[in-house]
Each structure stands twice: as structure tokens, then as C-alpha cells.
Image (cartoon, rainbow, N blue to C red; front, side, top):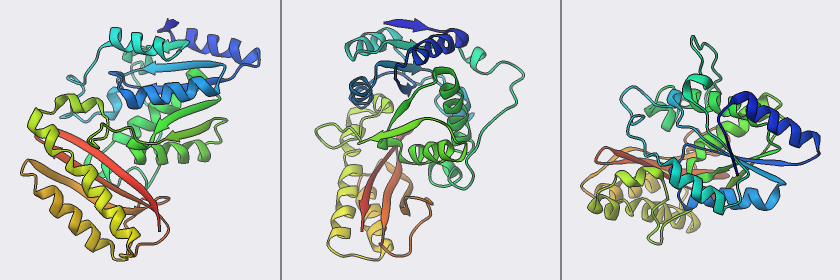
Length: 281
């Protein structure tokens, strides 16, 4: 397994492999790997000749008061786990190389980027789409793998790839969860023991919402109200948003119909967790 930090070095390696007719699967990450990340790596390993993973804590997707400085990092641990999953190359660039001063160019998917998490974190998805496009241009993958845990991100990246005619296939895999239902996230490490127990309510609220829809409820307001009541029962859970939105537009629906994303963001202490469920009604 190679570790490549140079942008030119990564591009040259990928060009050589593509010239040989080899396929490259790519999993972009910020590190501190958990089972959700590993499931993406294993799937990409199965489906490609070569597997590239990037580890880059992208500064442009963090707001000024967010957790860039304390975001969990452990490259040695990540490297060992990557090797076990059959990763061929870890692309591990420096921020100053990815964003050489004075950096002036950004990519933004309009409308989809300023709702839900984008409303709470202005500029976040501009940073995400910019770095993902840069990584695609550097790694030159055939297929890139993402998780539905960050559903809004996955939808935005798919739209960017389509709109910009990028010759890349995007695959999005199911959310990985702990046995108690808590969606796996690197930020779970911030949770205190009691907060971790309380955070289980997120998956429970989503499952109740799915059950209500399957039972025939058509008014999204009733479903959202039930979810909010459940979450508020956990005294430390502070709701950012709870929404039922159209999967294509990410706009709230007035009636339960079509392919829907039930999504939420909730603070437990200072830790903001997101989760979602997808349903066709």
C-alpha cells in the first residue's frame, strides 16, 4: 500500500493505471475510520482493479466556530485499517497544497446547498463540492463511493457530477449503524456516555416516521410533530431541524407521496448529529 501526498504524484499514478485499462475505485474521507467507512472500502475493493482512499480534513467545509481544530485524527490507525481493507493508495495531501494561496475558485450546487444542513452551516456544501471535484480531478477514478449517512451531500454530489458531465460513476451505500441503531459517525467520539444513550432516539424517531407512512399517514406535519416530541423527551437533545423532503429537490413536501427523505439534525451538548431514512410512498 502506497501513501501519496503529492498532487502530481497521485495524478501520474492514476493516469498510468488508467492507461493500462485498469479501473480505479475511490473513497474520499476525512479519516478516523469506523465501520461505515470500512464498508465503503470493502465494496470499492470488490468492484475495481485498484482502490484509492483519500484522507483530508477539508478546511473549506468547516465554519469559523465549528470543530476543524478538534476533528478526530489518527492517521496511523487509519492506515492499518485501510491496509486490512485492501487499499492500494492513500492520498494524503496537505491543505496548503490543495488550496494554494491566494485561492479563489469554488464550486456550488445552487438550491440544494442552502437547505437542511446547508441552512445551518452556510458555505459548508460549497466546501464539500469544491474539494470533491478537486479530488476527482486528482485521483481520476472510474467510480466513487459515498454513504447515505450524509444524504444531502450524496444528492448534491450526484447533481454536480451530472451537471458538469464528469465521467465518474457515483455509488451510494446504506447507513452503517451500531447495534442500538445509532448511525456511525466520527463525531460520535465527542459524545459523553449519557449523550450516546440519549442519541439512540434519533433512529427510533426515524423508524416511527417510517411506520406512520407505511400505515397510511399522509400529513407530514403530524409525522414531524411526533418525531420532534420523541426527540424533545431526551432533555439534552436540541433540535436543529426535522424535515420530510422530496429526494430530488430537498424541499419539504405538503403530502406524503413519492420518494422521500426523512432527515434530522440534533445537538447533544455541542455535538451535532445527523441521520435519515429514505422511503417511497
